[in-house]
Image (cartoon, rainbow, N blue to C red; front, side, top):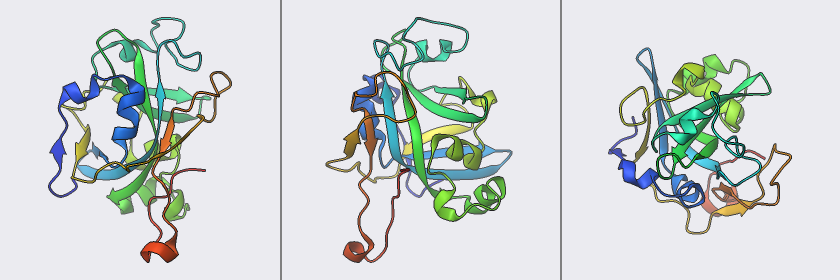
Length: 203
């Protein structure tokens, strides 16, 4: 787990998704799979609200989305296009049906394990997408409903603040609500400005 990492209070997640989303940037997503610890710094997210036509909860509660109506601070995992698992953090008041999709992380721990799970992929392509990060970190359908405060998946704060001015814009990979600017990303700092290029969100 990242050094000096501290758990985040559950009440922190009980805010609306568009408020939580940019604040998640810089936090660490940590996953323990059979004693193998992997983590990544969150660098890209998307917010989804119940009155949003792109949200899984827009038409009400179903067996698929029931976790989104549960307590904040739980993980909602779904299968996208029958191929990729996607991980979301449930936010807001109980029963509100909202969440934040974690779209990309910068690997920080357990990188060798991520390479084995994403064999043949360059390091820059290990976790720069929602399906990629789930595969790299070992997040699967069995993590749906996992409590981030009591289980193998956690989001912690190691003191890295979110960017003062995150990049924001329309969400991607959806066909409805595409104009809503609830995609938030860590700005990419050019290598010639800082010596090394870090924090590379998905394109």
